Structures are given as C-alpha cells and as structure tokens.
Length: 569
Image (cartoon, rainbow, N blue to C red; front, side):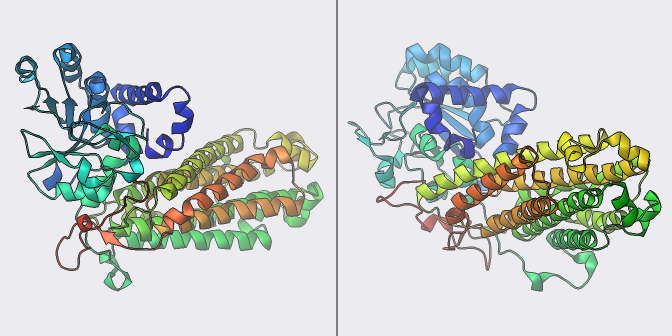
C-alpha cells in the first residue's frame, strides 16, 4: 500500500465497501510483512529511512483495538515507532493481548494502551510500554471515511478533511501532556509538534486515511537536518578526491556519448572493421544475402543506441539530482541499474563475438561506476518544497503509478529480448519482415546468426538496466518541486522511444503487433509526465529540513503547507 497505489486505486477498492477495503488493505500489508523477506520488500517500496536520532521513538499512530494486530505488524515497517491502541475496554482484552503477543515486525515499536478501566490497565501493564488514561477523541476514530474526520473533544461533528484546522486536532491527553494526537495531515504540523523533544506525536486514523501510508516517511524527511548541496566549485582538482556524484555524472555523460557514437556508426558505415572480420563479409555482401538485412541490423543498433542515451540521461539525473543531494535511494537506483547493465558485456561468451568498442566503453566506465556507488551518500543535502494543492499531488500519484507499471513492462520486455537473443534470435514478425527464416540465413553465413544474436541480447540487457533506473527513480523520487526527476524521465523516454519508432517506420517494419508494446509505453509515459508535471516541476518556495549549522536550509516547522480553504495533503 504505497501512496502511488493507495490514492489512485482507492476509489476502485471502495467499491468493495469502504470499511471492508480498508481492513483488507491493512490485513494484506500485515500479512506481507510476516512472509520471508516481506518486511524488507515493504520497507524498500516506501524507502523507509530511520528517523533522526532526536526523533527516534516519538512518531507513531493511534489504532482501534479491532485492527491492532495488523497495525502492529504493518505500521512499524512504514515508519511508525509508537502505536497507541485505544480506547480499550474489558471486552477488548483478548484481542489486544493477542495483538501485542503476535507483533512480529522486525522494526520494533513501543506500544501504548489507552483505557479508562483499572482492570484493563492492570491486565495489560506488563505487556505494553505505557498505559494512558482519559479520552482524547470521541466518536468513531477507527476505520472511517476520509471525507469525515472526528477531531473535537466531547461532542464530535463530522467535518470535511479540506477544512480541518490544525489547532483543533492537535490535542494533548488529559493525563500525559507528552503525548499529542494529530488530526491534521499536514507535514509541518507534525514536524512542529516533534520539535519538542519530550513529545510523542501520534497520527489519528483519519490522518493516515487522508494522507496515505507514506505519511511517516514524509514527516521523517521533513524533520531531517540538512546542509546545502555541493556545486561544481566544490569539486577539487585532484581526481582522488572527487565526490561520488561527480563520478556518477561522468558515467552518465560517457553513456550518452557512447550512445551517440553508436548511432553515428549505424547511420554511416553500419559495420566496422571488427564486424567485417567476424562476418567475413561487408555491407554489400549482406545486402546480397537479403535486401532487408542491413536495414534490420540498423533498426536493432539504433534502438540500442537510443537506450544507451536514455540510460545516460537517467544516470546524469540520479547523480546530479539525487546522489549529490544525499538521497540514499538515488545511489541504490544507480547501483541496481548498473549491476544489470554492465555484466551484459559477458554475453559474448554465448556467441564468441567480442566487440572492441563495447569492451572499451565498459572498461572505462565500470571503475567510475564503482567509485560512484561504492559508498552511501554521507549526509542529507536535500531541500524540500512545501506541499501544494492536494489535487495536484493526487494527479501526480496516478502518473507515478502509470510510470512504475511502464518501467516494470520495460524490464519484462528487456528480459524477453535477452532470452530471445540468446536462444531463437528472431521473433515471428522479424522473419516476416526479412521474408526468410533462420536456417536460410545460417546457410548463407554461419556467423550471421551469432552476430545478430549478440546485438539483440545486448539490447535486452540495456533495456533492463534502463527499466530498473526508470522504475526506481519513479518509485522513490516523486516529490514536489523535484523538476530534475521530470526532466530525467522525459529525456530518457524521448531518447528511448523516439529512435525506435522512427527507425521502424523508415525501414518499413510497421507490424502493429510488433510495435504495440512501444506505442503503449509511449502513451503511458506521456500520460504520466503530463499528470505529474505541475507537481514535480512546481516553482520553488524552497524550504529545507531543520537547520543544521551555518548555511543550512531554513527551518521547516515555520512553514504551513496547507490552508483551511483547500484540501490537506
């Protein structure tokens, strides 16, 4: 249940019944965390970060007894360090005892219980971290409609989420002033409450329903102390002291240069000396074998060149926009993509064809890639933007979902192309375009099939590397005002899709079934970027995390990200 599925799919899920869909979502997430590797997967999906040391153990949520068991398993993985269960009556004792006993999350959290019954307090005191008495919110504060939030004291009315005032929901408990409950989903409201290091801040169920499961991580990021990001003037002349992000930037630029060089060769001679030596034939001989063969090779290699440029654009963005600013997820995205892309050099073991230029590019760029990813970013250097209109964030989440699905599809496509290249080499539409079959080509030149297979398998590996970078960047980098994310994805999409479509049309390979995945990918990418642009490219009213020394970002708690006249984030 990351935000990019929670909000876009909530209307569909609600058709099953609001309470039922909410319970099912929480139960599904809780079940996933109990499976081997499940908690790790969920934590990676939401990019779970540890809170700042002075905030550890002070951010959490309030849950009703009936969902306590699932909440104790699921919410700590999302970033909650404290879970308050309440209000607990005598009839809830068996449920709460089982919930506390069965808590299996690897991310340990403190458990509070709120009750007005002495019997309940006495029974649960040995099992929990704190017993709280007194009521904070009355009415149904369990699984509720996002459109109505119970926020008052005493007689509670249902109010529109978009008009909730932070002062009403920011309530102190009657017996423990160190515990504050928030009914305002705005991030600065939570950070301001956490500024008091003696205070534990708990989100009501209404807050999580309105903001989504990513609320904890958004608060943690906003409360993290940051410093200004380095610039070009901060790079020393000695290469031994160059920062990781600069090495990453150079790798990206190298990939772009290599891709453009490959495109120039393909549009010019097509075959270089080592290609002719391996085949024992030149371009004229290939044309004599099959009139469509040279065009087919060009279409494979132009598509590969475009993918290389796309990877370079993504690496430049991840290095300059992500690693430079201390985002750990940017380094992880860069690392995952490169660990898939660089080993494709060894596809030559299956074909016996070593391409000198491919090898040279790998030999030069791979050590630089290691220098870019060997260490995690040392400290946070990002600057956050205040949340804008909620409707723009919701639209951007739809775009995020579309692009993550696109990235997954590209990865599957790349894996399929690699398998085809390593086995049958051609798909049926390829042979229809060539007006021949694999046996006939092999009969004309026994080395022709391994030569084509090398190109195809290499393209599949590059496509998988690009897909991983796209998916990870979209999954973890979707934040308001991060225009570099939008431009990185837009440039990568243009470089990857445009040459592929153009070359197919130029050579007459226009089979709809063959190009349908490309057209679908273009449509989803364009739709995603259109939906997300107002959010990702929002003008900078920059606010950083909390101040951290001279020259640091301005303090976030002083900034409101919502108003009573519009929807809250």
